[in-house]
Length: 344
Image (cartoon, rainbow, N blue to C red; front, side, top):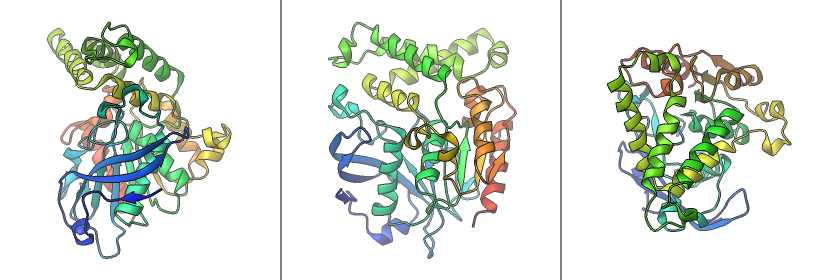
C-alpha cells in the first residue's frame, strides 16, 4: 500500500503546535472485507509539541456520531490532555467528518468498513504520516474505546496506555437492536430510495435521532427534566442526526454494531484481550444502558493491567461527554490525569 501525507507535512511542521486540519492519504487501502479504495483520506489535527524523543504523542478517537473535535474541551495547556506535555492527535474516523465517507459520492457503494479498518487507517497516519513508533496513550469514548482496544490488541508494541471511556469489548444485543431500529426508521422515509437517494432523507434521520436519545441517557435523568428541557434535548438529538448524510450515518453505526474484538481470534475473547500489554484506564458510566457495565467489567477482569472506576452519574452513556467543571467532567479529568502521570 502506497502512502502519502497529502499536504506535504514537513518534519518540523509536525513538531509545531497548531490545530489546523490536515489530511493524510492512504492509496489502495484494503478494507477487512477485501474491498479496496484507491484513495483513503484521513483528516486529523495536532496540538502541542512533539518532544525530542518523539514519545509524548496521545491519539484520541471520538464516538460513533462524533468527530475530531469531540475532545476539544479537554485539550490545551494545563487541561486534561495537557499540550504543555503532550503532542495530541485527534482524527476523524473513516466514514465521517472530513475523512473519506459515503457522502463523497460513492453512497451505498462505499466499502463496508469495520472498527479495525479505522484503527489500520490511523496506524498508517501515525507510523507513515507522522513517523511515530510509539504512542504515550490511545484513548476514546464509546466507538473511540472500541478503536483504542484494537490498537492495544494489534499493536501492543506501540501503545503504552489505553484510556477507555464507556467501553465494551463488543456490541451487545441491545445496542445491535437499537442500531437496527434506527436503520429501519431511516429506511421508512420515502426519500431513502434504497440508499440511492436524490435528496438526503432528513425526516428519517430526525426520527432516528429521537429514537436514539432515550438510550444515551438514563430513566432517572429523564425523570428530573422539565418537559420543555426534555423536548429541547430530543430536538437537539434529532437535529444532530439530520446533519449527517444518511448513508454515512448508517454505515458508521453498522461498523459499531459489528464490533467484536474477538472476531480475529475465533471468538475467543480472553485470547483477544490477552494481547493487550499496556495499562488500561477503564471508565464506564454507572447508568449506561447503551453499553452497560458488563462489558467494562469484562475488560477489567481480562486486561493484565487495569485501572477501573465507574463514573457516578445519571447521564447514562453521555457521562463520557461531560465537560470540565461538571461532577462527571471533574471525575474523568482526575482519573485521566492520575493515569497519565504513571505513563512517561
